Image 1 (cartoon, rainbow, N blue to C red):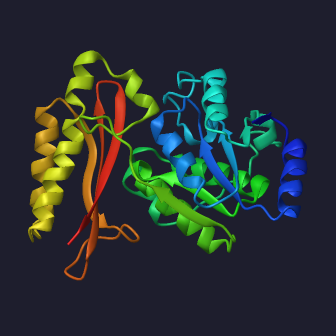
Image 2 (image 1 turned 90 degrees about the vertical axis):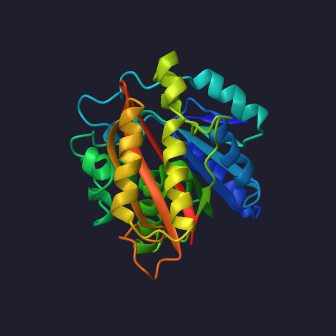
Image 3 (image 1 turned 45 degrees about the horizontal axis):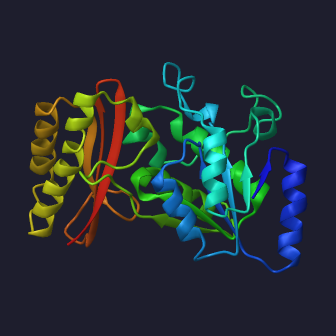
Length: 282
């Protein structure tokens, strides 16, 4: 595996791969890699001969007061895991490489509609930071396919819309959420949880599954199901940002013609913000 920090070195390598006819997959990450990230790398092997994993803690997707400074940075450990997984390149740029004109003067990529609700309502500007950094990574790597995890459902939906709207010749692939045995979705932020909070954390997934089971049996009382699930979370010690039933395609409100829904939630457990979702076929 090659570890690259500079844009020119990356471009030179990518040119050689393309001349050889290799397909390229990009797995964007903020590092502190866990088994969820590694599952995306395994999935990438089904789509491309060459795999680039970016490791970059993106400052523009953190609002004031969020955990940018505390976000775990484990570059050496990440490099070892990627080498064991036989990744071709770990691309770990510095901030100047991604934002050459500085953060205050950086070009922003904004995707209307989807970015201002759900997590976007709780974290204003977050998704502009996501789309701005992902668009830069896509321009740098120019992959044939880019991979994201389902846990960040709204994020992958926004990226899909951006790629389509900007006519990027890139396939967006979403990998299934990876979970601990008790159901908690894997996340770098799980390590913030205290022992008691970690014991309560699987309630989030359990509440989502309960809503999903009701939907599968024909319930259309969306408001009632959301309220009951929010009460479950509150009783377990969560402070919910939202729990919402949406169309899986486009995240619009559900209707009688919906045959695939997604139940999404974001909730605080102590100082840790957890997100999760399930897709429901009805």
